[in-house]
Length: 140
Image 1 (tube, rainbow, N blue to C red):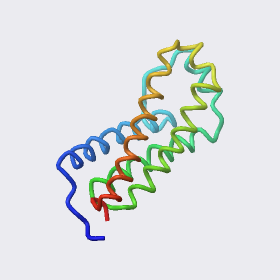
Image 2: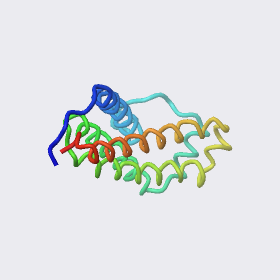
Image 3: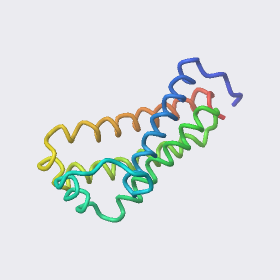
Image 4: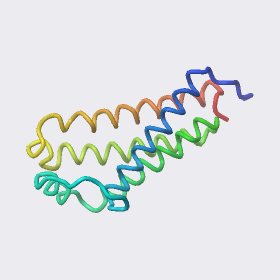
């Protein structure tokens, strides 16, 4: 299949995706203590203590695969699809565990659902975009 040029909006979304995933990497670095952050409340510390070890690996996989996949979108590379699907799976596992298997909602209120839903929603859109890009020949 001969690659075709993607529409302008595709490139704009790819740039926004890179920026979004840079924010995710920053929050991962906060999570592991690599960069200083604000002091957490007692309730937030209790919720973080509930997270299993694999959740840190899922967090890392989600944000770094998301960042590399978004860069792949920007560069027009078909491997972006694999990375963005990997990111989606990792983020569903992480955010699902956080919302449904911890005391986050009880400790921080029902608004705790909002950010995980946004994160997974954007991951779904980016995986769909990469799949569409491959099918339409925008990514080679």
